[in-house]
Image 1 (cartoon, rainbow, N blue to C red):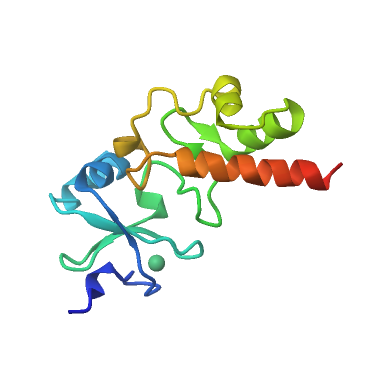
Image 2 (cartoon, rainbow, N blue to C red):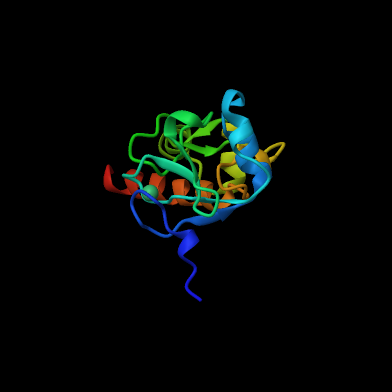
Length: 148
Ligand SMILES: [Zn+2]
């Protein structure tokens, strides 16, 4: 059986499964009753404005219906890498480029990222933000290298 339900109803790209508890927390309170008790998919297409969708129940939420900007969407501002502590990609770049941060430990010390992690409800994917932070460190180091 082909899992058609995982395809975004707008852009048709495959989404990532997200638990109900996460979606419930991310969607604005006024429209929360639409969430119900099912799990959702997160559209990972950066140009698509759909965030969460559930094809089976024909429910979808766009970028204006969730509380936080979704970091990988092209108009996300700020681009949070750690939602629990509201640390943006820019802050990681700044720590790497101007404060000599080189690894996760430095970033945790300088930005406060990853402390008091409640990723299950604060991160739009409901997953630990450490891979995103790691990716931002890598990008920051590349920028630093290229501007020497
Ligand atoms: Zn989409």
